[in-house]
Image 1 (tube, rainbow, N blue to C red):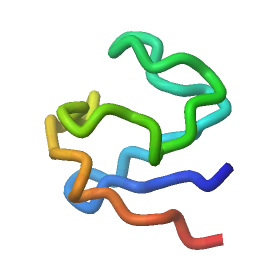
Image 2: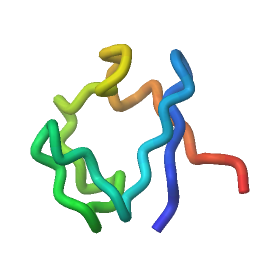
Image 3: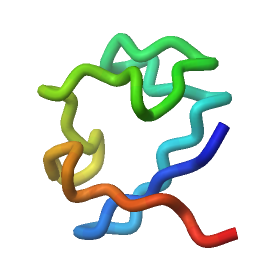
Length: 54
């Protein structure tokens, strides 16, 4: 599963970790996160994330 990075603050969403504080279970691919989810660090919307460079 691919990691995604917030284009605003640099927060990296790791699907293996998820975002438990926002109700996103570990193992959740970025594509399956609800559209109204926001970056837990800066509040940026999901469309401001890009796939992480490998």
